[in-house]
Image (cartoon, rainbow, N blue to C red; front, side, top):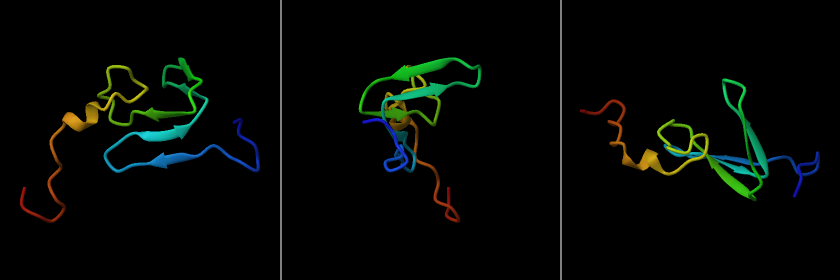
Length: 73
């Protein structure tokens, strides 16, 4: 369903995960390259570990847990 003023694009933010974006979408990289998806929803990588960047391939799950703030590391 296309975006309209009555129904804007929805982006869901997840802690330590990708951005979930209602599609279809185009992602413009910092080099200007445009990557498009016609899927109804996509996961956009925010950690840059994905082998299929800018799309998420769940590579973020492989990293270790972050130390708790204010706790002992």
